[in-house]
Length: 173
Ligand code: K1U
Ligand code: ZN
Image 1: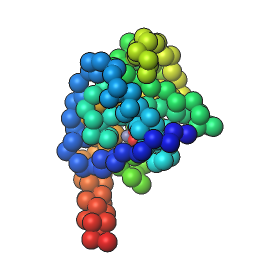
Image 2: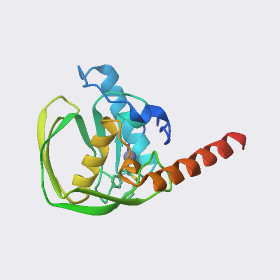
Image 3: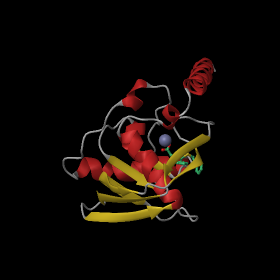
Image 4: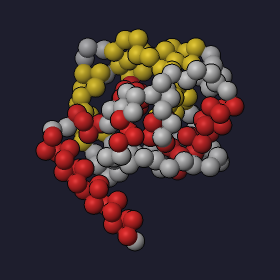
């Protein structure tokens, strides 16, 4: 568990969630300070992943921990999908930026991703199962895409309405 100060997670339909992230130019003190704060944010929210986009930082950085013990954090900087399996499966997804909403999304069963780790070392990750799903979900965030955009316009508009109402009520409370 990370003890760094958590950040605020942007909530759908915040338009900032649709920003396309730029590459991390340099792993400097700013990025080194951001990583533990993103991990804290993800762990505090009980998530298995978080993209920098979700905390209003529009650079290609994601953190993931799909381990049962919540003690195997992964940091992916400037991730690129080298290969995605043509075999796909629809599975239930959630999103920390779309609280309380879960729905099915079709994803490749396996992916191979190249990324830098927190120290700037180039890594290749071969992923399947929940890790493959989570990587694809987080990389969508970096492209400004939220999982509800895979759903029908009817479902998406219902979700939008529900979350806008909840946010208005939270502001009044
Ligand atoms: O990006 C995010 O908002 C994090 C998201 C990652 C994710 C979960 C499920 C499928 C794909 C990607 C979450 O962590 S949502 C909350 C959560 O912990 C969870 C929800 C469903 C299944 C497993 C975990
Ligand atoms: Zn998400």
